[in-house]
Length: 254
Ligand code: NAD
Image (cartoon, rainbow, N blue to C red; front, side):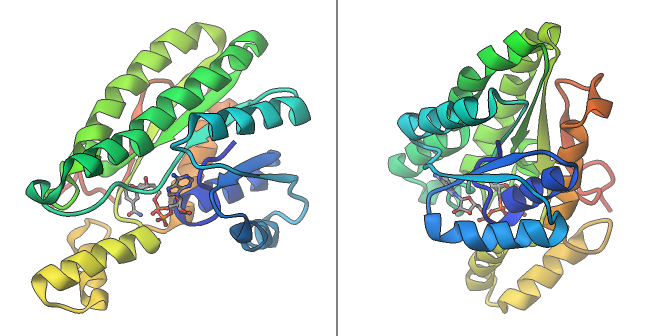
């Protein structure tokens, strides 16, 4: 199951898992996006067995319906990738109560709910992989992303707690922390910087890439590849980590 999987990092995770031979169920709020996502995945994994579900990850009912559907159709869940859109950007003084509340619902509550819903079947089958897509800002807070920085830092603790609890059942729980990755979200953040610093969006994107040790922005499939590895049988001895996939931003700053 890959949440919010019709574009960006979610789509890349779904594609990489399909390439590994997984049956992949993807959720998104907008049914119209399914055909394009399927076309993209099948361009790289022609025989992909795909399932789509309309689901807003902030809705407990939607999430439960999705999990029920996958359990019924496929007899359980082996791999869960929690993912969603990023919380609003701006200085923390610009964030109001609604921003914080919706940020909590979209980045934390969906994670607790989804794990609560899939853990029983994973425990019963004695195998599972849970991967939370969070952010580099969990380790290096960003003034532009106060809600994401605060909540994703907390999600590292939740990942550890879930990992400890589920490890004895053969279920690993890990976080993947993307750095600056070229998706619509990255373009949106560049638009915010463009308005703030009076530079073009292209300049903002280029400058961002140049600040990273690798000298460029990441690509979504580079995040998906890390997720596919953590979801694999080969990653059976890895649990409770928060893996930076950030082009060296945090661990080898210039
Ligand atoms: P994106 O904006 O390109 O894609 C996000 C997807 O989530 C979209 O398809 C959107 O429709 C969907 N979505 C949003 N809210 C949803 C909801 N309530 N229910 C269902 N679907 C919903 O973003 P992305 O770059 O792919 O980012 C994915 C995640 O990774 C985000 O949480 C983001 O904060 C995080 N992240 C991204 C970057 C980056 O540079 N792109 C860096 C660090 C962390």
